[in-house]
Image (spheres, rainbow, N blue to C red):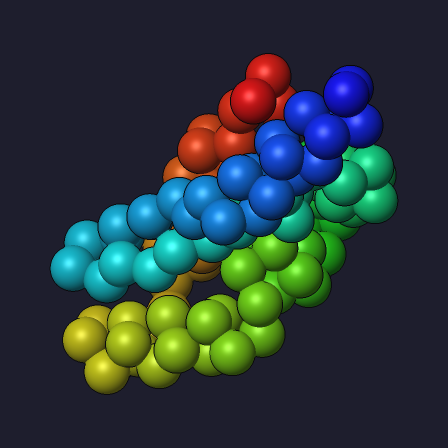
Length: 101
């Protein structure tokens, strides 16, 4: 019976997407992608001065295609993709993650 309960929770979590909005651009992420020790290890590297890793980590979390769409949107809107916008995306994605669920 416990196995069924865990499996049901995994199915529910897999279907739950989180909507993130930055300015006028919205996208959805699967919070389960963040629930990964490798993501945490990459985050630690990023916070210890590996800021170049921020792009790779963001692509891993939101997907390369979504990253390119976001980048294209902000380049069209502002003429460039600002680092501050990337930081905001990254922050909102990680703030949306609740490991207790």
